[in-house]
Amino acid sequence: MTRLKRHIERHAVSRIGWLRAAVLGANDGIVSTGSLIVGIAASGAAKEQVLLAGVAALAAGAMSMAAGEYVSVSSQSDTEKADLARETRELAEQPELEREELAGIYERRGLDRRLALKVADQLMVSDALGAHARDELGISEISTARPLQAAFASAATFSIGAAAPLLSVLLAPSAMLAASVALTSLLCLAVLGGLGALAGGAKPARSIVRVTFWGAFAMALTAGVGLLFGTSI
Image 1: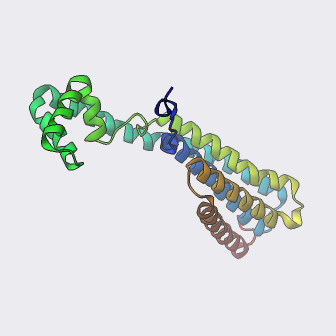
Image 2 (image 1 turned 30 degrees about the vertical axis):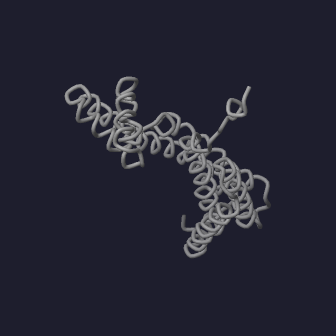
């Protein structure tokens, strides 16, 4: 077996669909639930009230994330299907124009005219729609929209993310509730940022700084609101 045959590439872009939804869900679960809890705790509410609000935030947030991702990605999927249907009609009605269009794409990528036409001819015979979908529309198996996958990934990871500040509420003493939740949330955000970057093949430092900064900003803001309005919640 040659080295070429043994060479297997695994690219992080193949994970982009579920990874984006998962990181967004977990991040939102930590930040929104943690910020809500910190704000309510800062207002002087009882621990039981804080816990109840956190549980409600987890349930509502998970459903909201699932519905939002499903609707958003479904819209993308509908657009892709409409473009593919239009491309199918054009291939049936004007194949020569579509051949020229495909060859033009390859010419702009650096192939000479003769080779571009040859490649276009071969692809038009083997998989005309696939070639146009990939090279003209930018639609591929890796990037195609998957609404259910995105919805489940967002809801599940939101719930996992939101569980961290809720667990902190259960374990922390009432006098240190806001500080404990804030610290737990920031630590979880740092871990999430690092794991998300590593899963995507990127360096973790920038991701960690980014997510912890905005998480701290959100919690500081809601804590300020809670202190401002006191127990009027």
